[in-house]
Length: 591
Image 1 (tube, one colour):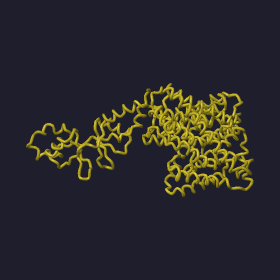
Image 2: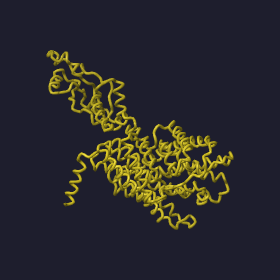
Image 3: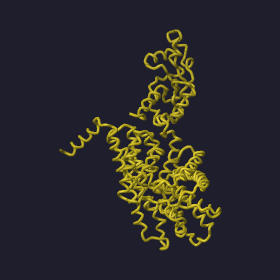
Image 4: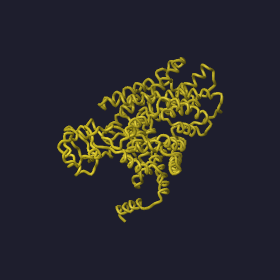
């Protein structure tokens, strides 16, 4: 049998009546396996790139290659994206959310590998970002590609995207429950039996594969030995509030700085500016080089003097104020390092920076409490719980934060502190910002899929496709006779009135002329201006679906005109929107 005939048969097999449930279970296992392999490839490629570039190079040797490497990595990434990929592959998680809400859950196949290569060049060369968002985009793209190949419907492709994301997080952290919960909280998939089982299969498969290939060498691994002290609960509450405020600062600054970089039109000026800022920060604070997980491990193991000692401030190691200010600067300036990396052309995520600032924040609070209040708080506990607090605040994902740190520590000895701090951080941040950093931009544009079925369907709907443009137009100066001749050619009962510049002046309804339309004596004396009425409102073509529905609600109208920069486009009807809504709702329900 020829290869061509084999693939033709394979293509036919995927279209026959196969039990969709069993097929989905098999595909979720496949997606989990591929996502884990992608995670292993990415982590190893970053590790060995970093090792190749930095082996034998230290601050003591007088080498300043550490300052040049990040700029070189961002340059390579920029050229790769601009001339080879020719597509935006940054902000991986937001890109997945946008595909779910506006692209029928279709991610471009190149995302299965381009994010891995681009983030390797960025992070392996010292970019101050994380690999989690790129690998989530990779895993989600694998799920989308597999689902599209097997001609699955929107709902099942979306579920496979979730399987890819769960597999990616589970594989990179060896945390299957965190991978599952991450998908439910961040990608906002429905928690149903039909969705939970494939997600579990994918997440457990990824964790198992990663453990088999890498053993314990998954980012970092730490075991808590100290017993939980109930008297420290108030301080975990304090840590939660501070983590929430820190999360708000990180989110706002990230969005502000990335928007600032986007305003710089020349990409090479943007690259040089970001590279200089990042290089300067790394010169002053070496822990900003790379993802930062080695810094977290140093905090967990109590080697903080090593971090301080490798900086230019090592001569002030006996000065506690400078010691504390050094770590405070690490917390507050990390957002500039990570935003400069991404803004200058690098590809990476903010997952690692969030853990970085959270861990340092926990260490700082524990250190200050121990020194000034003489409280015996284990630093490593506050480091871990601080990481969870920052995740809960920035990502608005308290359950992901709780289970991720619990799984990383190999048990649930920290469960109560994790719940307390994560909950307080989430409440604090949510009081000021309704949406997470991944969701806020999409939410502002009305493009965010949510757990609320009504809002999810509305976000998915492109109402502009429902604009009716086949209505026959009339002029205000036309006579009743002209209108009657137009009515005889039309199948509609609504006639927009426009001027010579296509500006809407009013509308004539068939009911408005029904009583006089057969009176021949009025054909030449009555004009359209005498019969037309002004619509109760209009809809701009740039408005989102929520505004459209709110306008219909306020006016009580069934048809409203649509304008584009003041010019008439067509009409949109409430009944047509409802029909489309019902059709789309079927894609979100159990089948």
